[in-house]
Image (tube, rainbow, N blue to C red; front, side, top):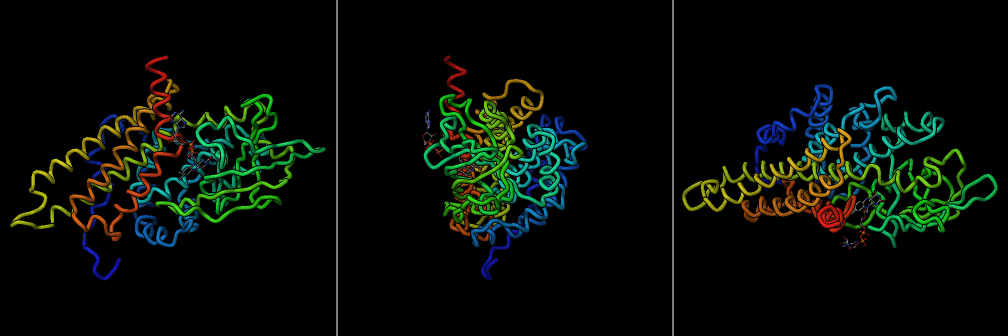
Length: 402
Ligand SMILES: Cc1cc2nc3c(=O)[nH]c(=O)nc-3n(C[C@H](O)[C@H](O)[C@H](O)COP(=O)(O)OP(=O)(O)OC[C@H]3O[C@@H](n4cnc5c(N)ncnc54)[C@H](O)[C@@H]3O)c2cc1C
């Protein structure tokens, strides 16, 4: 905080969360999952919220935040209890990430990428790989990253060109991966590579590669509009040699494996947007209740009230869409269209809603001694992660028209 900082007596995000929690969400979270949600919320407000702005200013991956997430048992959320994880349901996971993103999107996204990888290892990896890799991922001793996107291939992920070729009893990986979340610090990387171009997407396989393997070169983190804490960068593979023991998903199944978590990933982005909107609304409410103009509280001006009412309506609708989709995933029902609606709507209303919350705060809205500018910048990036908005429209329009 600067010396001229505004005293917001900030309303903790969880207070507003409770007021705005639709019964449908409460009912879907089991008691053990709720305990994890509560633990995550307490951790986010004590260990993340107070530091997130300085991490962003320093433009760095907050290793200390990830380490403390491990201490709080937040790194194996999708790994079954029998394998040392929390065995959280997808609805519980969405609630956890909503709470963490209410403090900071970057840290929430770090946890999403890591937890998705740990979950994929527990589901997909052969027994020997699970035995050696899962424990350190679940404890947070080792950080994971997911490497699908390339500089030349984004939305059309089946067309990746990073190559895996056999050489004796080794595999040799060559190519470039782009937009690697956690990439500047990752210890373990799931690398999607094309081993049989003639087979199209069926030629893709997945390796679980140690980040210190020879032939791996990392760039610095990208300079972005925001969310630098994700440590997103490019990673190059120059004749990187790995063995059969590093094959996580065999030839033919790699692309399916990459896509199998996509619905829940989109739901989680929606839930994270809800978390950021909640903080936006809480911060704006707190401010306009105190700020005076023309002989009264800004909070009593109808234009201000209605603007915040619109944000609240969008937040309610975004949460209902997000948790409807989370429930569909958790219950094994078709969820692709629900997830696409949820992600598209939540990302859209988060960006607009955060800007509206900043607007009712006047020029103070643009200052960085409260979290809204950080959340607004991050909300722009949510439009691209886990399938850009237009890809959600491809899914939705296909369900309507084909
Ligand atoms: C912060 C951040 C973190 C990320 N982390 C990861 C990560 O950890 N691992 C990873 O593999 N990737 C990651 N990504 C990459 C992300 O998945 C891609 O950005 C996304 O898939 C879109 O690809 P692209 O940006 O290359 O857009 P492009 O594919 O180049 O698309 C450009 C534009 O064209 C539109 N478009 C494309 N196809 C169609 C179509 N059929 N119809 C209509 N419009 C279309 C797109 O919607 C977009 O607006 C991350 C991205 C961001 C921003």
